[in-house]
Length: 252
Image 1 (cartoon, rainbow, N blue to C red):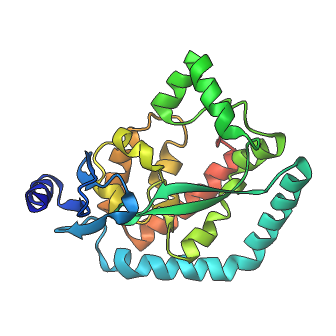
Image 2: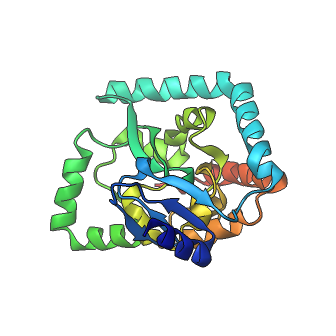
């Protein structure tokens, strides 16, 4: 049965994540993704983003830039962490995201919300139809009441993303790539082949072209465009464009 499902998925998209032997799994978008993502093993017949640069050059660029700029970003993270501690609570936050091949990892961020953000989120979704609709459409809340005063500044300037440089350094992410998504967002994403073919990035084509304004499913089309044209030049251009986006403070 597993071979049949893999064959059908490969014909449809060229990518498949094998369902583990326990048979626990679900079919989502263009891949076969196990309910227990960590148990999935990726099999690829023809990949996106499989150029020499995508396979090796991106990793060299990531590590080189992070090591060279380490004194700067470590200092900035330290200052931000102190500000968050003075405001109250742990300055860092970990959240499960999907990486290359559907493997899950813990993404590190500076905490921008109140300590009981998850509890407040459940309450908001039950009591505020407008906020629930906004979340279901974009997977973001433009005026999220859970964000703290320091957290608002960090989000506007995208400084809350800086700890993800550690995720890049250990190989979970890349500096440039698809925006990392949570496992339960995969059914909303659309065709997932392009996303699963690359490491998710701190910045990317979607982040600099749409930022937070587009519906969530729009990301799959943007990520597909990026995955089919991964190059050193494009990554450098996107990194510089990110500086402009950050300067305009359009994040939330």
